[in-house]
Image (tube, rainbow, N blue to C red; front, side, top):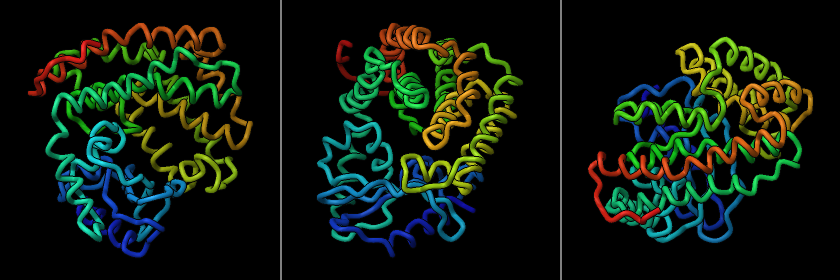
Length: 332
């Protein structure tokens, strides 16, 4: 399926979907950044953001429509300044792939966001928001249950990749964030910094065979998760989403990007454990391989990521400059 056709399928679904306060909808994620005549990868979904005025409903998550896997979330209607400062909202809305705009307000918002999206002030604001989330590692609660502890560590520990992508003006992708950061850093002559990003996660020395073994254990756990889309992460663990979480990750491993695939394996393992405990031993073994198998080693790894923030900010400024952006640094 072509990207343009995928966008049309999403638009048809939105046309039949309304919630109180509906203000419009747009395509986000990689499908918003790709050319309309490009092929939609088999291991991709289509991110749809529905903008609402008033109370924001819970995320719908992943489901199929006309054979296409959609991932639908809701966002509050906000002024351009708040959107521009949001690393989650600004990239998608800047692209202007609107699939519903009843009163034209979304088009006006897109125009404002697109105009200032690459301004250093707003790029730095989005990077600062990500860096503030990395800093939450300083208060990491390692006394939480295994799955919650792994998620509380893994997400902030991976966010330096999104700082890199944001500074370079590249789509801040989710599952492939380490792959995309690797490409950006290599293109700017900073391949060595990618090794630091991997080291902060603890996977810099993991072999392909070891990661592949962890993935196979994850696949077994994933296939035994009791399906319940109403629970947190439920729509991410469905049979329909398997080709992204498992098959898409296997594709990375087969391409020799096994270290870059490790973060998503950790996250998916931990999400599975929030449903059933039978994968606990497998996740513990993976965390041991990453050097975060105990509360103390996880705190140590978190401190390493925090210690790397000054270097990350220097790389951020380099990428801002080399991407053609100028402006006075925020001094951080």
